[in-house]
Image 1: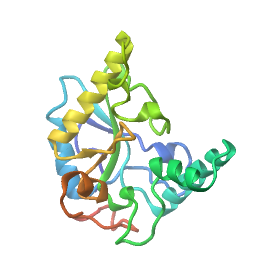
Image 2 (image 1 turned 120 degrees about the horizontal axis):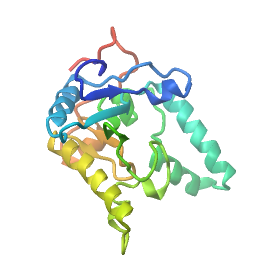
Image 3 (image 1 turned 60 degrees about the vertical axis):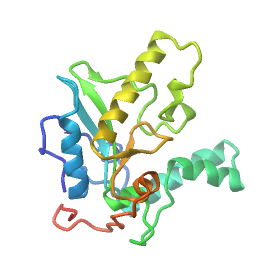
Amino acid sequence: MSLTGISEKIVVEPYYFQNNIPGAPNDCYLREGAVKRLLKAVHFLPVDHYFIVFDAWRPYKVQLALYRQFEKQLQLKGLAGNELKKELTKYVDRPSEDPMRPSNHLTGGAIDLTIANKHGPLNMGSKFDEFTEMSRTDYFEQIKNPSPLDREIKENRKLLKSIMEKAGFTNYDEEWWHYDYGNQNWALKTGNEAIYGGVLELAGHRITY
């Protein structure tokens, strides 16, 4: 289901399309069950705040491009073997065309987003898709003697996390922007069975149930 136009509090900015990743859609799509929870999350936003959505359902072709791109970056840093594999899969799921063993974004149950207000996106301490330790959701909670800016960033991340969790999503610990509903990550965090398999193609710009 397209996220464009479903709420004035949800702004769609398809990051990979805007950055010319081959195969990236010029919209963001979620399963209907995840959309219901995202609309619920809207009600928990502070006054004059809104969501910016960077990515949701991600086609195999895009997942493959991101995987290879990050793999090359790590190789240039000298990583190889198990060290390379560990760091690579920490941030980018292995691409899969198997609906029963999908990457999380292929399910239509994963969403990447942030919160903004009239001044723009809240300061989250690292950029979307910045694959470093600073992007770990609790990174700024672990800092001893934090500066006022560190505390601001910590509270901004906690705000996003609390809103999304109240709506039924779970956070991927390594990425402050990544939330899940109904997929493998969500199942691992909640102890439930995964609801969604992979979606290889959209049917009329809609991902059912």
